[in-house]
Image (tube, rainbow, N blue to C red):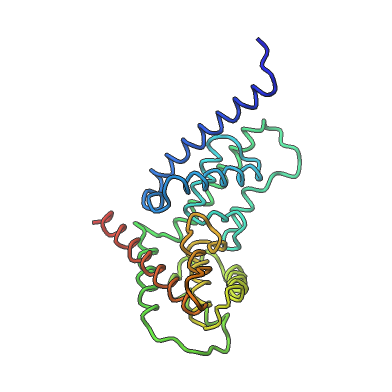
Length: 263
């Protein structure tokens, strides 16, 4: 029996839908707290978008695509374009010369490099037993409780000093040039949302540092963009306060989760 082009397309759609469902279930196990907060419908959309994004890098085999989805939860769904993570762009770059490997083997090779680089990043950022990250979350909570200046002459230096104080291990791993690029991108994003006060602008930079450069539009962390664009909150300053409240709540919840895990 001959299979028509239409039948083949339907079979491919069924296979893709099955794979998406498997990846949704994997995300529920891989990032349970985040998956519960998102709900299954949003999670399905995130998986679908990640599969499409992975395909732009030539990833369509099961293992490489699953890795790509996982890294989105760990580093932000835009990790492949984040100035903090040049190792991701390098690993995902397709070879200029034709590869002697078959397409799946070539993907697996690049995925292995990406996986190794991600492990190095996680080791540096999280630390043994997540100690670096837990300490950073505590420092962030302490910093938020301090009084802030209304004016700052050098906002870049102000932001870099705050990031260094909160998470020195990640700053050392990412490096000063990339951090300056991140702060510059954060300043542009803050201007877009009319966040003028030093505290408000730094808040957005800090969220980009923690959740990824594209966090304001990241479907994995929809609360960030929702607070920044909430039409029910009348002013940018009040939206920043709402965003800060939610960010601190997230930090406390993450600390509580890790404390119970390491108890």
